[in-house]
Image 1 (cartoon, one colour):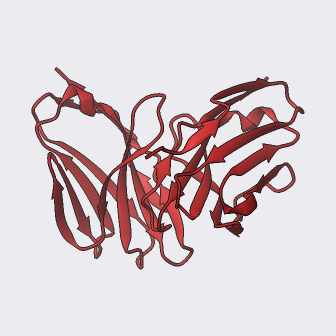
Image 2 (cartoon, rainbow over the protein chains, first blue to last red; image 1 turned 135 degrees about the vertical axis):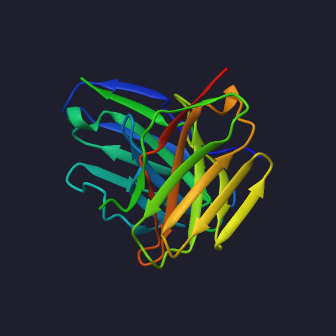
Length: 113
Length: 111
C-alpha cells in the first residue's frame, strides 16, 4: 500500500514569494491533516479535512495561508506571500478514521530567505 | 499550562536498559492517547495507541495510562541504539476532536 505522498520535499524561496505544497493521502483515508513543525517542536495542526470539507481551520493564518481538497482526495496548501517565520516543515497526514492514528508523509521543508 | 507536556530531554539511557518517557495532558475527558517516534530528519511514525487505564504491551514497548492523574508513559525495554529518536506524545482532545502533540522527548541510547 502506498503511503502519503508529498511534494516538493524541499523548497527555498525569497520572502513575499508564493509557495504551494501538494499531498496525496493513502487511498481510502477520508481524513487529511496539514501540520506545521518547527525544529524541536511537535507538529501543530493547521487544517483538518473530512473528505472535501475543512472541519477545523481555526489555526490556519487565513491572511496568507489557504488550502483546498478538491474531490476529497489530493490537497494543496498555499502560502502567499511567504514570510521569514514560515520556514518550517509542512507535514501532511491522513487517517482512516480521524481518531488519532495518523500516517504522515515525508514532509515539505520550506526555507524562506 | 500546555495541553500536552513532555520533558524535552535529552534522555540518555545505556543500551539494554529500560527507557521511560512521560507525558501529561490537561483535558480530563480525553479518551485516546498515542506515541509517535520521529527519527532526525524524518516524519513521525505511530508506534503505540492506548485508550484504557492500565498497561498495553507491544513487543519491547509498553504504554501506560492513568486518566485520574492525566498521565501517559511509554516504556522501552532492552533499549537499542535504533531506539534513539524523538518520541512525541499525542492526545485526542474529545471536546474539539483535535489531536494535540507534545513537543517531544529526545531519547539517546548509548552503547
